[in-house]
Image (cartoon, rainbow, N blue to C red):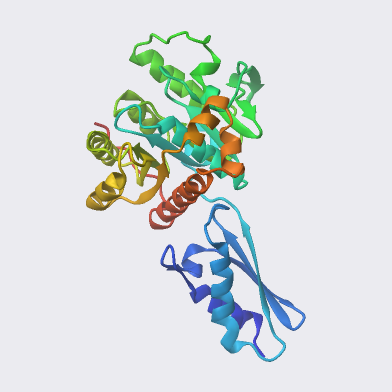
Amino acid sequence: MATAEQIRQIVYRIREPQLGQSFDELRILKDVRPDGQSFVVSLELPTPAWPDQQALVDLVASAVAPVLTAGQTVRTEITSTVRGKDAGGRVGLKIHNIIAVGSGKGGVGKSTVAASLACGLHSFGCRVGLMDADVYGPSIPHMMAAKGQPAATELQDSQGNKFVRLEPIDVNGLKLMSMGFFIGEGQSVVWRGPMLHKALTQFLKDTNWGELDYLIIDLPPGTGDVSLTLSQQVGLAGAVLVCTPQQVALLDAIKAVDMYKKVNVPILGFVENMSGEVFGRGGARKVAEELQVPFLGEIPMNGCIREYCDRGQMMQMLTEENPSRDALRSMTQQIAMQVVRELVTSPAGPVLEIL
């Protein structure tokens, strides 16, 4: 008869098809325990957004079948605990993964993708924060139907030193911070670089984010101050680049790839937004292949995305049946898996090159 140790050694050697590594290398086998004549195999995934989890169950069943005798069976249980580089710890943040969502130019739907990613991860059960770093054009509060002004709480450390923390706006458990909460509707922000740097530092370091699995940062367009500031403040799990399929947008996206490479920030991949008859399809995938950067999916130009954004119902767009839901959930899963790939291949945080 098979033993628990035999089952364990077999499961350790199974190669996961998406990442191409063994269960042992991925550290996803939690336990194998007897259950009468049978066995329970417990897998613990590094993200609940892992796609096609049934395939893992089938792999285990197929691998152990040859050693099972009559009457023995194996049942696989799957749980998840998000793992990350925890690079936010160097500035006092308890955040496992910080993901920047950027673009080479404006008007490509970057904020929509950032909000969709945050809501998508939240819908999979992750603890998520969304920081709107587009100080001059904050749109996240409207998309999330979030109102109010973050409260300031005075706290005290173990040495008796007092400090102030901003409380993020909570939308159904998703934590938000944006300049839009501090200015009136229609009011512009007219700041120079140093004030911008200070505001972003406060949003990041002086906000009571709590413990998060993912913090999504919606960057302003381009490759300027904000991206460099964030790269210096924390170790990013990686950057997601949003572009539309037409050539003029792709040229700017290529520049963004170059910028992130110069500051040693991992590029999680390209998302092609607004795919369809108007802007075309496949341009971002082609450029991703040429640059040897992962392609994370395309989001078709559907009118329902605009409608959900205008109504401030981004969360509902990821949970209700609609023409865009599957594409957005697939994008979310691909990004989460790419973060896992980066974690497996490069466990330490990236080192910033000072330009």
